Image (cartoon, rainbow, N blue to C red; front, side):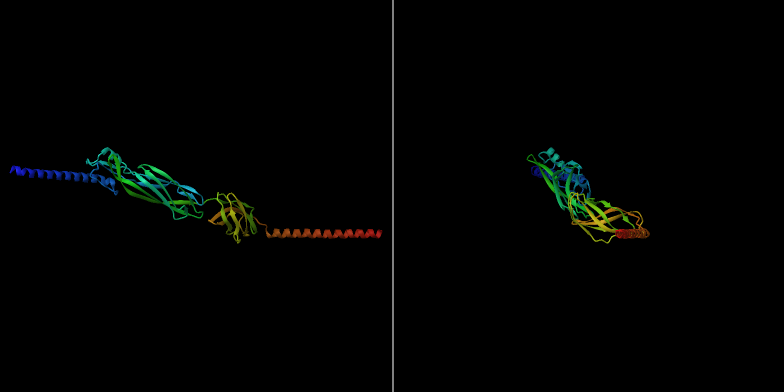
Length: 348
C-alpha cells in the first residue's frame, strides 16, 4: 500500500508545487501590472515571461513656435521647438529570471521614453508658401529638444495664417537581450498642434514724399513719390487716391507699371479741397494694386488758406488797369513821335 501510494503522493506534491509556481508567477505579474498601470496610464503595455525588468514611461512630444510673427510678403525662417518631455516613471524588477543579461536588459528598458525616427511635417491652407515641408531626426531623447527651421513666405495680402504641425515617431515598449544583442519592440506614436501665426503688414512699399500743399477751395495736382524698399520687384502697379471730406478726388487709377527694388516713382493725383476746409494737417490714402494683391499707403498733407474771391477780383482789376495804362502809354507815344516827325517835315 505504501509503495503504491508514494508515486501518487509525489504526483500530488508536484502538482501542488506547479500550482504554487504558477500562482506565484501570476501574482508577480499582477503585482507588476498593478504597480505599472498608474505610471503607464494609456500607453501600450506588454510583459513577457523572460522580462527581468519593466519600464513605465513614454515620449511626451510638445511643439511651440519661437517666432510666430511673420511679415507679409517677406521671406523669413520659421523656427519650431520640438521637445520630448517624456520621462522614465518607473523601472520595476519583475522577479523573473529568464533574461540572459539582466543588467543589459535594464539599460535598454530605460530608453522607453525616447522617441526614434521622428518626422515633423508642417502644412498651411492659407497664404503660406511652401504649403508643406518636412524635417526628420533619428532620435529625440527624453528631456531633450530640437529647434527646426522652415523657410517660408506669406502672401502680400494675407491677414492671418495658421500652421498645422504633425509629429510622427516610434518608441520602445519592450527590450530584451538575445545572443548578446539588444532586441527592441517598437510601436508608432503621434503628436499634433495648430499654431496661429500673426501676419504683420510690411512697409516694403512706402510714400516717402509729397510735394507742396493743398489750398482750401482749390483744385490742384498733388505729387506723390512711392518707393519699393523690398529686394523684389512689384509688378503691374496702379495707384488710386482715396480721400474724404473736405478733400475729394474723382481721378481714375494712375498706371505706374513695375516698381523695381529700391526704385521710386512719382505719381501725380488731382485733389479738390472744399472752401470751408479747416487749415490743418490731414492723412490721405492711396491704394496700390499689383499682381500680388493690394496695399493701402497713407501719408500726411497740409491744407493752407486759399485766396478769397475779393483778392482774386482785386488782383484781376489791378492787372487790367496796368495793361490798359501800358496800352495807352504805348499808343500815345507813337502819336507823339508821329507829330514830331510831321513838324520836322514842315520846317524843311
